[in-house]
Structure formats: C-alpha cells, structure tokens
Length: 261
Ligand SMILES: O=C(O)CCC(=O)C(=O)O
Image 1 (cartoon, protein in one colour):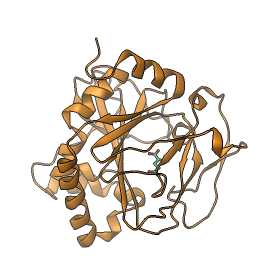
Image 2 (cartoon, rainbow, N blue to C red):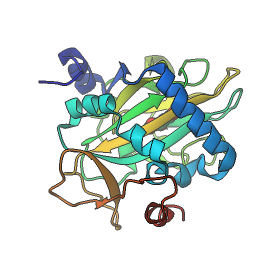
Image 3 (tube, rainbow, N blue to C red):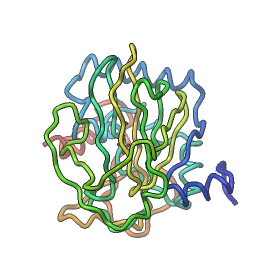
Image 4 (cartoon, rainbow, N blue to C red):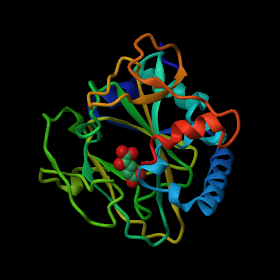
C-alpha cells in the first residue's frame, strides 16, 4: 500500500516519467526555508551555483531537515521503496528578469549511475510558473533509447556543462510543471526536461533533491557518497554522509570540502 501517492499518480509516473503537484509542506514552511536560503545567499554567494550548491545538507542543519521532510520521503517511498538515500540537494535559483535557463537534457545521461532507481523531488520555495521559468517535461521520454548529449557553452545555461540532448524537440509537446510553494514535482532520471528564463519580477527558487535506493552504484571511478534518510543500507555502495548537529560542524565541513574542488 502506498503512503500518499494515489495509484493513478504512480501509474502516471511510470507512463509519463513525472508527476506534479504533490503538496508536501505548508507554504509558510516553504517561506521559512526560502528566508534561510536567501540569508545564506547574502553571506555565501559562492555557494549558490555549480558544485558548491549541490550538497548543502552536509553543512546546514535546516537543509538536512529539508531533505528529510516526512511527506517528501513518503512520496519518494511510494516510487522507490522503503530504503532511501539522498544523493544531492541542488539549488536552482533564477533571479527576477534574468535570462538563466536549463537546456533540454536527461539527467541519467551523465551521472554515471548503474540503474534508474533515482527520483528527483523538485521542491518549490516560491511558486514556479511559465512566466518565471518552471520546468517543462516531455511525457514518455524516460523510455527513449539512450540519446547522445553535447556540451555547449552558453553562459546563461544553469547546467554545469551546458548539456543539450541531440534530438529535435518540439516545445509544444512538453508539459509545463507549474507548482506552488510547498509543493514538489517528481521526475524520473531519464525524462527529458528543460526550463526557460525568468521573465517575472521576483525570484524563482527550487531545490532539486535527488533520492536513490542503496542498490544504485556509481560507475565512474570514485567513491560517491549519500545520506541515508529512511530505512537501511545493506549494500554500502555509497559512503555515508554525516548529518550536521549544528551549522558548519567541523566533521561535516571537512566532508563537504571534498566536493568543493
Ligand atoms: O530548476 C530548473 O529549472 C531545472 C531543474 C533540473 O533540470 C533538474 O532538477 O533536473
């Protein structure tokens, strides 16, 4: 029996590769997290993009709380089963009236993971709309055979390597994932998705929390790490990450620094 997703939602996820919206926290709590994030942004602007914005749950207690929000994990459990690790918590912030965008890509193409037991819970800390550049997804594209991507160099592309899928994509075939603050969308590791610029007068803030099962392995040649957030891990494919007891705890900081270079 599922926790919170309906049978139809689980079937939609299997058929389309995504579902939305799933309310997970009250909007007042989303505002609390947004304020924490913006005050962190003022102090540490260097941590707002790229590799330095991928695992803040290692050093900030409120981010560690956020990745373990009960209802998010209930929804993820409905898709991945009872044993869940958080692999990353990537910030996707688009400033007001800003050209930053995300090119069409499939996450699974370049993450080096052994299978598709990963789902992304994209949590909106502000409403995510067509005007401010919400995510767009192509239904059923998670079932496509493997498609090459190429690297591009547009400075406004929020993806680290500017990855673009090498396939003609008709934008009008895609679905706009408009969600409110406190809601998530859930997407499959191989679904094709993108997002446009923020043409609104306020920030669009989202956190893409990637959850895996302990069964997944990193095939690239390094020992990857993840935080066990529910259940047990009998595989030890990932080094277990420390959970910070207070912000910038020394043990967590030294673990975090491994990801800064
Ligand atoms: O936030 C966005 O606009 C894109 C996020 C994304 O590509 C992802 O979560 O995989």
